[in-house]
Length: 469
Ligand code: NAD
Ligand code: UGA
Image 1: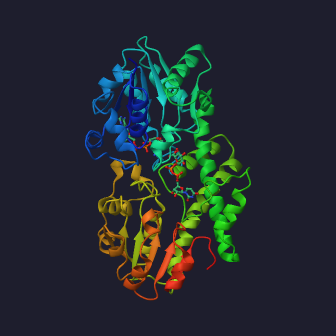
Image 2: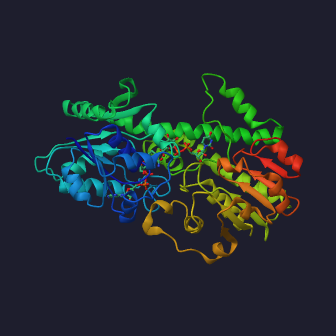
Image 3: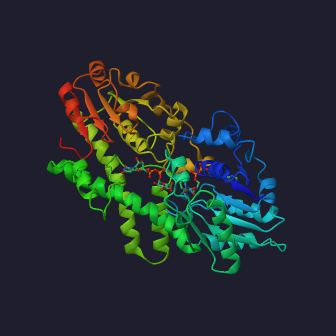
């Protein structure tokens, strides 16, 4: 029996390993983490992350060939294949702060693997890492060799949150990078045979290590660049009377452009797009390519501009001040079907409105009050560095309330900001909503989910990204 151990029981490690366990019943899969509460949650009826379909997959294999444990060293020592899926956040201090990837967690995992291993292992980079990381990891792994062979592979993950299980069941591709040596090729073959249980062979791409590492950063940069491109267009649409949905549809029917990932929004969020592009920018700068670095930096700048533009629109529409006004914030997660708030545009928008002394009433079906308060009190980039968690600031408590119902959030509000495209926000009883609000009643749709014409008929003043005003 092949044994797999995955270090890091997060958004990637948990679902990915659960699907491997489901599809490969003869493989024992153990997911380990230093965070005991997370492991306890994986072993309970309330999994630590909300992801459609995940509960079902975990229930089918947990206790059979899927295990979650804090005994990191034991399970790493016993494994044939060790996936490393720890967080790789943006550095907050020192050389490259605000751009470079912080590989502290990765390095400590690699040192531990080197220290506890008693048999040969394939070590798989699952985390997103800077290109050439495998070289550094190889050096760490071999420092304590004792005759043990470690073969390193890059196997970046392309799942998106909210659709993780569907993406893992039917990936567009699985990418495996390895050394072009006989050992490297043998390791690629071993990992390929795991995925081949359910992924067609022509969808398993094998490359050299550096291509695999860079392809992950490139894929996220290209995806984010599409959003910044359409968001830049949305500003021009508002200035000219064009409708961004019509523009997206018109350009998306060109088969060379394609229809996906062209939804204008208040900005992209999520744990990875910004950090991976910043990382790419840093790598370009370090390689003496400032023009390339500046090109990709612009994707982040447009995203920041889009969030700021939204805040300015709210404040300027509401007679240049939101001081003391109640604003209902619908949705806080960075996209629908997840409770994840990492880098959600809602944080910057809420902070912008709080800066103008608004009173916020926030509702998200999957995000707790505690999480929202912590997010609003934290400094940029600190969310992925647990040691830097900031205490709650009393001002954010007074100005912010978090409720468990959209209608309660909206009652007596002067304005509504839609921050996440949860389906329920499309189907609210907007006449009832209008009747319960202060007049004039404003709605600012950061996700283009509301029916603008219908709401205008009811009496709302509506602003929707990239739509005629
Ligand atoms: P996460 O923060 O949810 O999970 C990482 C886990 O690693 C945490 O639970 C942490 O406690 C654990 N950890 C850190 N150091 C450890 C150590 N030394 N030993 C044991 N456990 C340790 O992160 P995530 O969202 O799962 O992302 C992991 C990696 O995958 C990142 O590099 C990210 O860029 C990449 N990625 C994420 C996504 C996504 O959708 N979230 C998609 C593709 C790739
Ligand atoms: C993204 C990628 O899609 C995954 O392939 C990748 O594996 C992952 O990052 C990662 O490396 O972490 P994710 O961030 O989970 O996945 O979700 P996306 O669906 O890509 O959405 C990211 C952000 O862009 C969200 O805030 C979403 O609302 C926004 N978005 C997306 C738009 O504003 N417009 C669009 O057309 C699409």
